[in-house]
Length: 79
Image (tube, rainbow, N blue to C red):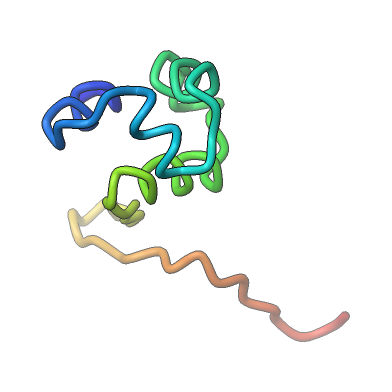
């Protein structure tokens, strides 16, 4: 489902979504038209926050199991 469709299902205009997210309407238009492979996760989170929605990330492993990704950076040994 497209980001635009999500916004429309919630019942917000681009202008309303932009105001809620603290973004310009032009930026919301660009986000909705962006290639998701190049969109920054933080930008997507901010956009979805404006829709009163949240981004959930998970990795799907080769065995089909799903592992939630919480966004916390793990530091392992060394520096």
